Image (tube, rainbow, N blue to C red):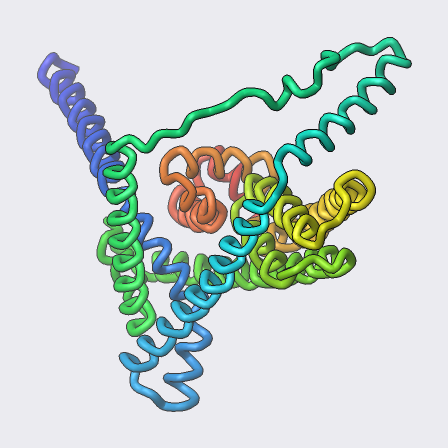
Length: 364
């Protein structure tokens, strides 16, 4: 091998690395657009049964069927928020009527009792002046930059929603449009293999979203039973909201824990319940029952969903959620599992010769 061949090899390797880096850089720049496309594809899968019913059973044109399907999905979303927003306003009103001094004294009394019990065991944690735990005061000021950022976020949100709905409409109207985009973008002549891969992805994601819907319904029933046992106001809406929080892996149930306790406490305060003898025991029981519901979800519902569709190790799923969250934010966390499922199918179909791919796709 002479120096010319070595030079050509080095130039070729550098060129490939440079092109790969450029490709990754471009993907990073358009990551939000890719996110819109993937979210629209997921929504089109969820709306496909309605679309097929309207187009194939009732014989409505594809354009009108897609419009009706998208309107139904958007209507459900608007109805959900129309229920949640009045609830939030009402609960905020209940909290505004709360006597904070009385609440502080009640909590201080509880801490005092805990401290006395610990001191009897020669354990010293709290200071004698318990009110110091609540003395820090914070002054909140609205900076002009905050308002500017708020308007920017609102504008980006509106653009994102419009973009997703627009793309979803065409994915619904043209059933194979997403497949055609992928086939046109994939640099391979093996069209049949690409079509088979896309078919497998569609099947897995359809089962995943169906299982996810059943999980949300099951958690909604469990939360409804918990809140109904304590006669909490607006328990249907609270249970629905906390059930939908399960769409956010790991963080969703944690947020739901604070939401269900805060709203339950607010409801109890509006009924003039005594903090020490009624509210604290009820909140403790709600917390315990909520944790039991989460155990049922983690031990029964989620394993069934993951076993039937994702087929991945829990640690593997956790790391994937972290990566997607860092790259795409909250939407990345929500769509990390279906995105990773699609990626594994692609890797198994086209890169199965690599050992690492064989390892992460062995259950598919």
